[in-house]
Image (tube, rainbow over the protein chains, first blue to last red):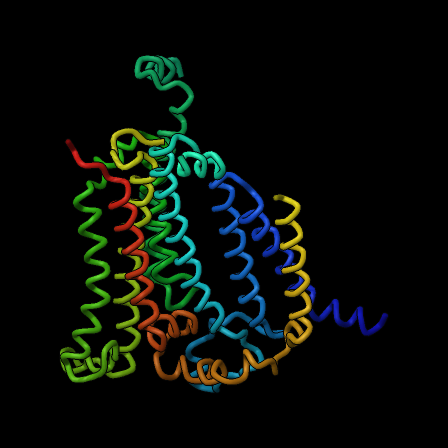
Length: 129
Length: 159
Length: 90
């Protein structure tokens, strides 16, 4: 019981983000409307970004914006600054997420113009004819 | 007060008079704040992507409060496309200029041959130049995505 | 169909939760994500570029290639939306 409690305190943020990922995953494969699938993909991407950013935290650390003159005079202690690399990589991931959502919405508009509906089974029927 | 109500009724605006007046007052300040986020990226959270999104959001706010046609009067399609292309070209052009001046691609300290400021100061200034380029490109894409997706490609009548 | 999707989701979630057993604790300063390259960046970024914001210094200078291709990606997304949606004036 004590070991399990220590485990929960050490890793509960990863478990929460896995739950969020699975919500997005279920929306991507379990729903039939195409817009709902797209929203599920967005939830999935957001959960991944949060997981990466939270993995770089240090206990008792501050943000990676330092005081220039103090650092040039005295140097910086690495254990008091949060890891900046996940922040940088996740900026790129956010921009990719926006781009993919934009292109997917444009393709959905063309599908609606062509087939008149956005439900997956009706589109498959019209394609199969 | 009576004259304001008469004006509103004559122009056929109704309850969107408040929204249109307040948007017309607010949009220059939003754009100023977006420029501040881009330029102040060295000393505070921010930088190119974030400031570009806020700048683009100011034009989207114009398109939502008024017509989509009205927002193309404030920022024409040609100017939008031009600014976006200039943004990407500024970034790649800085890299090429560094390579031509004798360093590696995107090695900002090689630009010291043009204006002697110091190798370390040129790195800080080079980061600022590419952030401005990124901000212009992102602003263009935000506005262009909204125009195309909101009107189905025809740019006549939006949301 | 929906029960099959729910089953697949639960199985995937269980496998992922089993995978988090090997993760380091949250907030550990000796985790492998914080020990190989990021101390080098934290110590050297302000001295070599005179920019107090370490995230902007990494994004603009040390990883400048990634940001350039990032800008190209978002530009291509705008191009793709224009080419999919605009109709010819006929």
